[in-house]
Image 1 (cartoon, chains in turn cyan, orange, red, brown):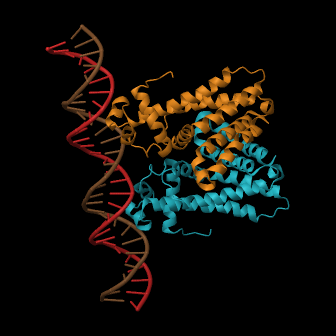
Image 2 (spheres, rainbow over the protein chains, first blue to last red):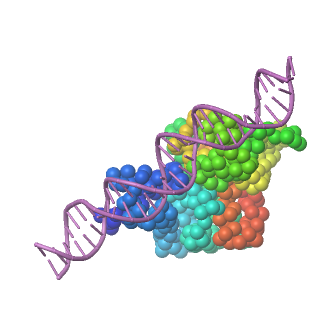
Image 3 (cartoon, each protein chain N blue to C red):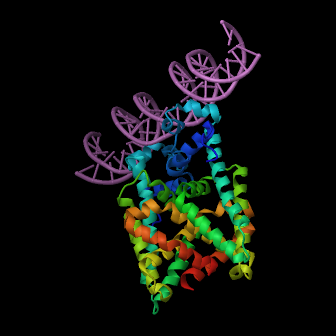
Length: 197
Length: 197
DNA sequence: CTTTCGACTTACCGATCGGTAAGTCGATAC
DNA sequence: GTATCGACTTACCGATCGGTAAGTCGAAAG
């Protein structure tokens, strides 16, 4: 709605994101990305100088969406702090379920940035984690715990959400789509049990 | 102890595992693996016909260790079924913390096998998941729940364990090693809260 | 002493990679 | 009408990839 005509750069980002998410940085060539748009790889090099720059733009795109989740949660009216945590849990779950590519790419980043570490890339994650922990700490169930316990519980939640989101295809192959659909339906309540009692 | 002289093949597997875990299938060349042993890539091709075969052997190696966890848990004496689940939780946590490369590679497999899917590779995972869910279902806390809920809770646990295990380096970069050490110490109790009340 | 054989190596191959350089081409500005 | 410019394309490059083919070489077997 806001962008009826996405810019050329954005089109490349949108095309590259699911490819990087599914096959990883080294598993995707510039020709692959350009080919999907029926262009040549040189068009990418024209807009982004290098492959790394394209990848960085994709990561930035996801970071923006993660920030969006936090903004929505923090802007929501909530008399009680536990309502805000509950909204956070639901929005995180819904986002990763509806955009599993985001979860896939974030997870790959987590795995890859041992090597290809640019310090800047981690600060969006830091802000996200810090705000998440703060939300957790504001809930009566966790308020009395130590910071380490609060952080552990937060990361336990985030890990569960992302891991389940990236496991969809494999679980479907193992158990079939129908059963996975049932598990998916049971997942949010199970998460809320853990986080907001 | 059992293998004071690991076979040549096993040496390649042991060398390749952390490389694949850290950089992924496409991020590691045969020359990289062989170079660490001061051999040429041809020596790998001699022992394993293709790169895929080497990778498959590495996955098999991990599958064996996962089976080992289940075997230990199932063989342990336990009057009450909840003791067995508790042992499972502790062993899984300890294994993934002490061998984060295993968690890293399993997670990469989960991400990659959209493309490079050999059906055989998933059945070790199926057995592992099925036994895990069965352990969960045997515990009073979960016995009354539906199969979907039991599975969701199981996968929530596994996801949290693996995700935390692969996040070590990133979390250390964000918060520093000391704080991550505290979080690590708080993680197992938090897991047990969720799984075995 | 010779043969065999497992465990390698050197030499080489075609394909593909990211990236450079130098155009092409339609739309807009003046 | 011409100059400019953004958005591409074609042509090409060196490096690296996985894999084939054909040796080499020390130890064990006869």
